Length: 136
Image (cartoon, rainbow, N blue to C red; front, top):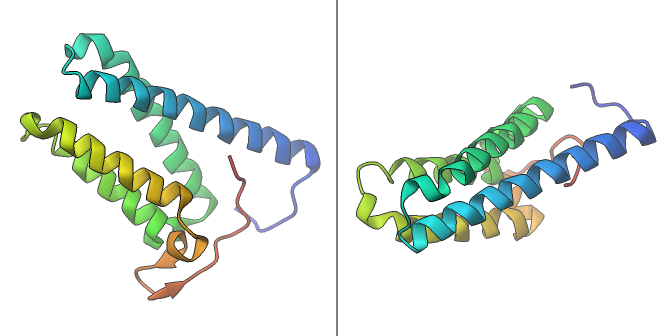
């Protein structure tokens, strides 16, 4: 993506779009959390799983297209680590609840940690700035 100024209407469309995606993702994660933590039948929370996966994939794609360096910043690396932990649900179903809690804690670290942490590049071994991002 070119590093250019967005028009005000384009900014608001992107901001509302990203915020809406994040809200849908959080709704999906909450539904999955309820199912996992309370040991409900998968059929009861499967739609939330699908919502979380689709919205999370769209959010990841958004970040990667905006600036590929997201993949080497801690915010991207930790997101990929969360996906790896999710994959452990399959071989270790008895540990789903503990894995979910760890994933949730990593999510808080990524979302609410200081910018110096989120923007730290594991490749450059220092903070690198991303292109202008749309919060949401």
